[in-house]
Image 1 (tube, one colour):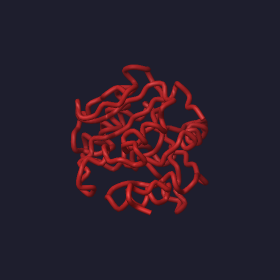
Image 2 (tube, one colour):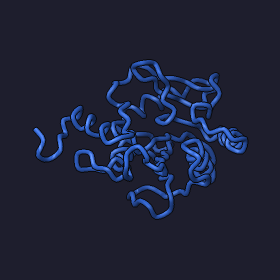
Image 3 (cartoon, one colour):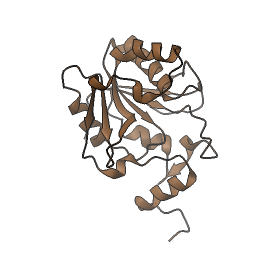
Length: 203
């Protein structure tokens, strides 16, 4: 399943990985880094942005974009991505993804893309099997850029507040496995087992 070229993608990889103990973007899962796996779900996007410290990673086909507010979390990363997309494409939708979400698929993003068509929608978030919204694997419109800047300037850092509730569409019923999040080494080990990717020597 290919993604529409008018969709832009923003992969955030500027976190400290404090709970993981090392740079989790470079941790391997099935022979690929978490960075490569997260990027793979968004390969069809027409403009692909890697929001990370300059020079830290190389990802073919992705344009490096510096986080303009280092250390201020994914809301700041989204602000940087929306600004870049607005400058390059005028306006449009951006798929925001973190490197700690290596189980996402093109079908996941296609489901969110289909839900954006509701009039007045500025964000689309998936609901996990427990009904919780997933703001770090979501679609955002560039029309939110000034709102985000005002929030960040005012000290707000919560990504879940990026779009007003009345402008946020939700998608339920997606496979539970896509929501796997890797914050600690044990999360990675559990995902390896889930996907049948035991490490060498295991079995």
